[in-house]
Structures are given as C-alpha cells and as structure tokens.
Length: 475
Image (cartoon, rainbow, N blue to C red; front, side):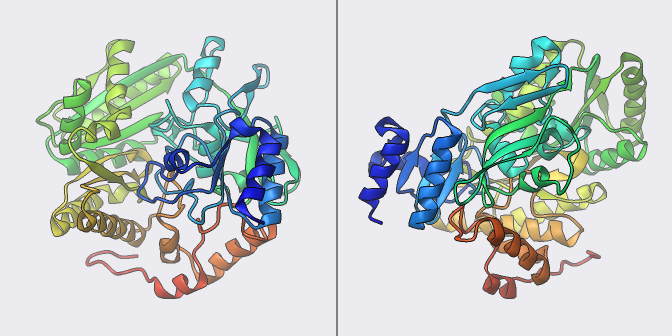
C-alpha cells in the first residue's frame, strides 16, 4: 500500500489535525532522551482506544511498523521508529478516568503525566509511588512500557508492582482487558507480562494502578563522606540491619558539585560522596530508624549526617537529586545515561571500575544512582558533534554494562532494553532463553509490526556476543 493511501486512511480514522507527515513535523519525533535517531513516516495522535485499534489494524494489514510514544523521555530508544512507519503519540489520551479511594485504585489513560496523578490524589491522602526522575514529564503509559522505577521504589517496588489492570490493543487491532481492581486474578498474570514489554506485544490504552496512602511521617537524611567506598559500604550496612528506606540514593563528589552549582540544594561541595536517605511510616517507627541509620553511617565513617528540619529543606534536597541529569547539561554538550544493576555489595568496586573506564577512554563519568537496589546511572559526558567522542561514550557504556553482568547484575533496572541494549542481551540470557522470548513475541506480534528491532536480538547477534572476563571478578 502506498504511503499516500495509508495517510488517507489514517486521516479518515483520526482526522486531519491528528496526522503529521511533513518532514519538518516528523523531525521532532525522530529522537528521545537517548542517542538513537530514526524518522517515522507518520505521527498520529489518537483520542480513543477505538482509534488506536483501527490504526494498529491498518499497520498490520499494510505491514507498516507502529511504535507507541509517550513524552519521549525514554533513554534506551524504545520509542524510536527504527524502521520508519507510524508513531502513535498519546499526548491527547491524557485523562484520569477514575479515582476509587475505597479500593485505592485509579484508572488513567497512557498519556497522563506521572506527577500529575500524584498531585490529583494527594488532597485525598494518596499518591502514585513509582517516581522516575523525569516524573514531571514522563507518562504512565511509558512507565508501563519500560517498567520504570525511581528513587522511592526501593521499599514499594517499581511500576509492575503498582499496576493491577490494563486495556491493551493487540497487533491485529483486537482490544483486550487484563486484570482489574483486585490485586489477584485467575489464570496467567498477563498484566505483569505486558508491563515492561516495551510495546512489542501490544499497546496499552488504559491503566489501572494502585494508590499508596501518604505516610504519617517522613524523615530525610543527608549522609556526607570523604571516601566514596565508605558511602557504598553504608548502603550494605543499612540494608543488612533490616532497614528498608523509602529511598536510598547516592551521588559521587563530581556529580554533587555539578548539581549544587545548578540547584543550590545545600550539598557539601568538598565531599567525596553523599547518601540521600528517606524513611517513612509511623512517627515512632521512623524516629527509631533514624537513630539506627545515623549509627550505621557513623560506623562507616560518615563525617556528618544532616536531617532535614522541615518540608522546605527536604524538598530542596530532593530538588537537587531529581534535577541531577539536567544539571549536567549545563557543563557538557551531551551526556549518555547508562542503567545497569549490580548487587549492593559490589557498589564500591563497581564505582572504581567505572573510573578506570573513564580514564581509559579519556572521558568524564559522574555517578548518581539508586544505591538501595544497586541500580547505577553513570553519566558519560561527551560532545555529540564529534563522531569519535560519541563512539567512545557508547563503548565505555558497553564496558560498564558488561562489568555489571560479570558481578552478578543486569543490563537495566528501569530504562528498558530498547535499541540501546538489544544486542547485549546474549550477555545475560542463553540462546534457549532468548528463543522463549522470541516465541512469546511471535505469538502476540506475528507480523512483527509492533515496535520492531527492539528488546530481543536476532539469532546471528546471539552467536557473536560473549560476556568478557574481568580480572578479580568471580561470576
């Protein structure tokens, strides 16, 4: 089918003001927050589930790829139309459809911005727990696709732990309802199966989420260190003591200085590292945990532990952390954000390895990450106007991920696989395991029109990739 004929059909489905096709308009949708670039043939803004189903059915009929897109804040290329085709942009499906306080549930469309849901239900005493750093912009539909996390998911879990039901459009245009208001459903857990599938199995058009009650009391601590290894060891000390903070974040000295210059959050500029620790719950329990955390920090040579004295001070500390990535943009033309996972006990040696990688490639790499669950976010600074620097940053990121796997970790904690890590999957999974994933994808997306060339590598790639060995690492 000619593109002109497809354009006419898309216009008939969604209206002329909902279909973009000019080169100038399409340029805005060829990138996300990662490094990959590819231009779609069309961008379509559906307003209803029925329109989504009709577009997906048309794509299946014509063999044209279709890629769902939220706010474009993704970091792994998940919303990049690598093979052209149709980008379904969900900016117009942005309504909160229902708030059910009695059952602690909300029903939202995929284009609802993450933070807006929490702000909507906070007067009722609730919030939506998953809070990516991009929560002021990212959408819940994108969070579902990537199974996003955030600083406050250490105790409460990532997106999949807060989604109980989905409305999904399948690859042939059929609409199915999965799960519901109950936390448990009969049969296979298809809701959980679709969360994190990166739009390769179906396109979500309605999401039922859990609402979490606002805690009675919150205490936020800033632990300051002269040695980054002491900060890493404190993470192990706290969690080994049976304390699970609501959040346990870490920044190295280089990063906190960059952040402080931009955010004026009150971080000490002479420190080697800081931990941002948040405890929440009943007042008495939090007060006890504060004492225990202070003691753990002292045992690991923290030079100071500050406690936020009021909400304004707490918000200032979190403002710095949430805007850490943006602060790097003030001092570097570009930066490459990685997303690997390691066991908490490996934090000190992994940070040391990252600095060795930085030295080997003559790059600056800062570290700001979810230390409580070992989810690293190395920030690799480079100039994207230089092909050589771009390639160096990609290779450095690849080496960091290889190391994460070698110490018992994973390729991603919350940013997804997408294009960026697709060809690295054989480092983590066997050929047999990847074949199971392919068969599942083919069962639900037999023509491969839903977000092709993402998540799962081809068979040839699997034969070519091998996990390297690093000195001193026992797998």
